[in-house]
Image 1 (cartoon, helix red, strand yellow):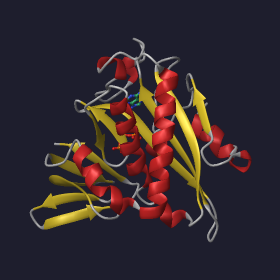
Image 2 (image 1 turned 90 degrees about the horizontal axis):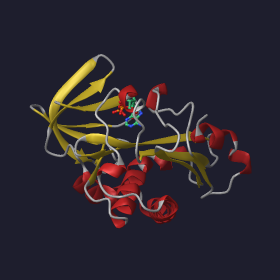
Image 3 (image 1 turned 60 degrees about the horizontal axis):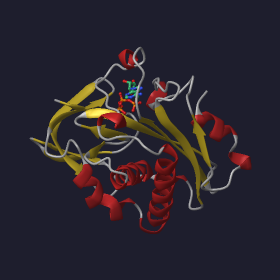
Length: 232
Ligand code: ATP
């Protein structure tokens, strides 16, 4: 079904860093129950288990750090020019190349269990492409894909490094790096919050990982899961 779902159900048996890979998903998901299309052989689908002893609050901004790790691992393997869209997408040429979905469980006062999922388009079969209702991109359109296993190893290694650094230093330490990779930085955008739509210029992220929007009334910051960013 979904590597994230499988790993969430497996938490009691997992150690931090354990990875689940799949060739396809029949119930891949995005944020707020949206459908994530992951056909056989067309994607790198991966979920990684991690644990934060400090609890849920310490996880704020973690999905942004995951995005940086993936972009940099890809660049190292010859896939240059990949950018980020707040809070959890990878973009290439203004089109969606990959999605990151971080899901959590835990109790007050206990550790935070995290499942960090990603679906990265490699080469999407015809017939599936048409099912994606927004502009999309695939890795094969950037450079030749030679070594999927090597790619996974690079990705997991980079994720470990960055997650450890995140535990020590928090999201603030990654702010500049994230802002450099931000596709929308300096562009006119709309922020969608339920029925409300706020227009402005995207100005990267703040110290907590919130989206900064320049409006005629000044800079506003947005944090939280019910917010979507769109180009103007
Ligand atoms: P948000 O800004 O709120 O995250 P989003 O539309 O990108 O908006 P997500 O939940 O991140 O939402 O991702 C799900 C969406 O991604 C789907 O509704 C679809 O538009 C798109 N999508 C689904 N499968 C793929 C895919 N393989 N490649 C690119 N885009 C996809």
